[in-house]
Length: 234
Image 1 (cartoon, rainbow, N blue to C red):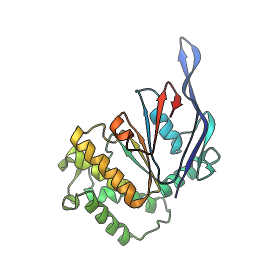
Image 2 (image 1 turned 90 degrees about the vertical axis):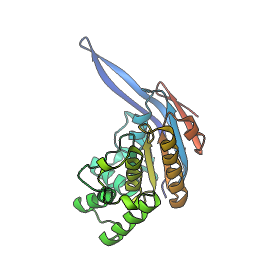
Image 3 (image 1 turned 180 degrees about the vertical axis):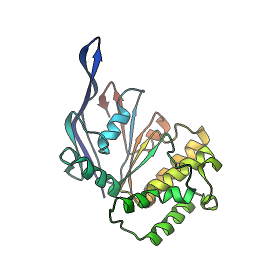
């Protein structure tokens, strides 16, 4: 069970214009709390800072000011290796791009997070046989078990995104971060993907955090936040 607290979070980068360094404020004084098993939508126009906020919450980036508490653990105080280990244990990601390995089958792509844990010499919570069985189960949940031996090039865009979602859930993450998960899909397929994500959320009690332009998606979430020029509005 994971909850996240964002406290006075800020992100600024320095840009150079005609030899002069000028600070560019991406996020400023962002604060909110996400309880375990909540569903949260973060909305805003392109360039409003949505993806940056998601990266900071996931510990993929570090803030200029403020902090993110991951189960009361301050991500700022962790090393990059410690943040990576924390993400591997508790988090998963779904992006607009599917990021499937073209040389791996659907089943092998789903098993990739488990294989990476083994490679990093982290101790998985399940055995290799259990991981394979769980991968088959989650493939069945997303309706693609008959396609388990197909490569990404043999799958449609919607099927590839379902594989990406199945991969995200293979280790039963406590929190799933999704950055425009339906951005490359047609409306009908996108709706099916969202139904799938909420269905898995309900079944596995995971926390969902969406970055999205989709207002219909946001209305299904427990919390909705709007980012405008780096400032947050609920």
